[in-house]
Amino acid sequence: MKKIILLIYLFSCITYSQYEDTGTRGIYFSKKNYTHKEIPAFETSKDKLPSPILEDKPEWVKLYWKAWELAFDHFKQPPEGSPFVSNYLDEAFAPNIFQWDTFFMIMFARYAHHIFPSIQSLDNFYYRQYENGYICREIVEATGEDFVYEGREHTVNPPLFSWAEIENYKITGDKSRFAAVLPVLEKYAEWLEKYRKKENTRHYLYWQTGLGSGMDNTPRTGSGWVDMSAQMVMMYNDMSIMCRELYMADREISLKTKAKEIADRVNKFMWNEEDGLYYDVDDEGNQVKWKTVACFWPMLAGIANLHQADKLLINLKDPNSFWRKIPFPSLAADQKNYAADGKYWLGSVWAPTNVMIIKGLDKYGVENDNAYNFNEFAALATEEYLNGIYEVFKRTGTIWENYSAEAYARGVWSHPDFVGWTGCGPIELLIENIIGLRPNGVNNTLTWHLSRIDKHGIENLRFGNVTSSLICHQRESVNSPAEIEVHSDSTFDLTIERGHNNYKTFQIKKGTQKILMD
Image 1 (cartoon, one colour):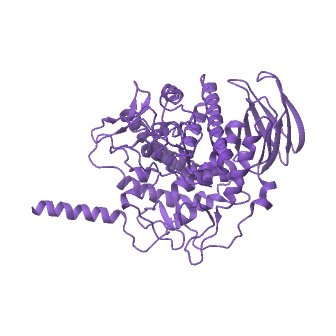
Image 2: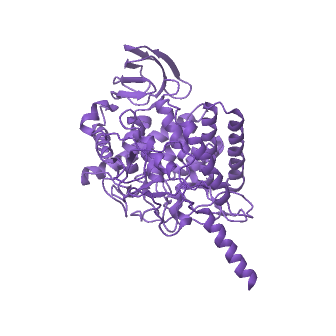
Image 3: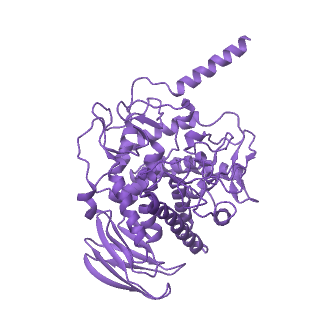
């Protein structure tokens, strides 16, 4: 009996120490005070935003502008008396900020970084970090206190801070944040290593909960979760990029090595060759075979090799599981708990996981013999996703938190006016996977995956120190020569790709010029 009491006592001490608030917050983040900055209005900012041109799809352009209009309503200042140190993106689900939501809002809002620096939304999480490294997934805007729902074990969201920082860097070319955020992220990684790996497992991978993962009522179990483990790989790889840019070579190598070690364990324990999917695992390393969108995180993390990516692609194309009327359901349609109306994470289509899948496909759409299949399917999936969002918008006048995979209808349950992350489709994916533009502000380059035949392009696209407008004129077929007009306020390199191994790079000069891609 004494042993049992001692074990209970020791367990309670360990549990408490994970979330012990010493009263000292934000010591690893250099920003300490809020500087007042006005919130921009959509009406006075619209002409400074990227303006898409899609002659054959004006409805998607209409949806694009609706998403931005809603987004500007979610740019917020800290309430009076709040300890927050920066203006921020607010998804308006509750009077709290959420990590999971904020990461994906940044994915589209970074295209307006020169108007509202959305990446600074993360500052408020960094400033409320505990002394031991813990950062709560949800924080009350008015007080800066943690908001805990159904227990502290659910308060750790996907560790995607570094991913958001790097993706923002790719557009802005501004690495000035890295020195300030790296100490925060290193301490957070230290906490995750200590408290998000269950002891005495065969796999030594990372666990999550439904609420913590962001997939609230997912039916998954196990002590090794695919998404959490893949996200840890992403975190270490992204931190290694920060170290490279800060000339910390030894630390860069150490972080890359850590990422590879985790990736190797993911492939060893979680990959199922027969099914062509990654699965969660139990303590003994046995796979827990739930087919959910979480199976695809190893693509975005770059863990899957090309053979594995091909098999994952086959699953995404399967009409019996993930390729539904609106792709991709959070739980595959051939699973026993699948709900046709969505039931939140039992089948609804969600922006964060669709972005994860499509950007994962993009990773394998580069420099391999099957690249065209990945790029083509990513564009097709985006088209079907946008069609669904637009059809529901046409009937309801707004954008929703999630959607049914089986009909042009909002998911059950979902909130309206939810640009919180649903703006990723009409903005980020429209620019990158429909128009096909991949800007890189780090080295002032732009890659254009040219696949449309209507008049299309964009005006006022800003990346690095370049603002450019590009229009491809209508042509008869995808094999016809492309006549492109470019106006830029600065020089940059434009690479135009038309299918596998058919690309050409042009040096764009300041001013207006016409180029012909044969």
